[in-house]
Length: 417
Image (cartoon, rainbow, N blue to C red; front, top):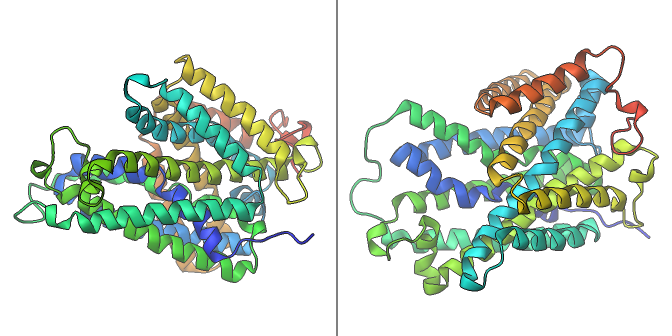
């Protein structure tokens, strides 16, 4: 039976929802609180960087398609050791980050259930089970689900932003004194809005006519993400809290003109579908990476529809353990985000370094150098112990001559080609 492939719309659906993810809920009010009315300029600058980031990885995915994504490009550019290092970065990030994303959604669901609420961790685990079931279906089905989710979220957020314009505050749109330190800190936090573009390479073998599909999908996603982020950020920044009941969250206020008393349930559902889309992309990409890295081992097993079922089983086990740790308060969401964010950045740096070496032309190289500088600066704001862990692992993989950390000797997800 012929395998179904992703077209531009379905591939863009797999990217748009995840890139919006929890960031569209958390970042607009957070950045405004930090940078004041100058937050909108931080958003404009970061969305420009996002276009550049997406453009580089789209080109890299077209030229070097593989389920391993960034890791494959890293191997082409620097050899097996750097490939394995990139794989390690991504798998560690994908072991912690998706659980944190689902917990963001579960907190909103938890707030709706009142006195009869079970713990947020239980809601998060239920969302996790639903996501794992969806991931076992054909990739075109997963893409369709993500496309529907992201389209609905985009329409609701954009429509609510427009509907909230009459409730904007009076006076100039930009007030207050510009604070360089606060503006810079806001820019660094906004890099969370870019996480996800580098994962497009993990789906490069699932698309038809890569040279046309991937650039078109990235363009559709870039335009959609930029429009939604800027509209939501503007509405969250300029809406007048005095026109609403006290205690409402900024995004709840933004949805109130369109949905009235249903604003809180709508934002809860919206958060859930966006976070689930993010889970689909990150965990689905990680499963394909593990399957490709396993080569001929048990974890390389795929269904007739090309779903990496064995690798998904491993991810299910790891994420179940993470949720158990969350339930017993061994870990918390902040710790998960701290670990995942740092390792995602490292994986992106591997991809950008590979793109610098593999993509011909001064424009690509200048773009890669600029992005690497930005990501390295962001990485410096990670927790010191996370930075030490990354440094230790990097030294072991790059400099170890005895190949103790070479995955060629390991059966399973870390076995190299």
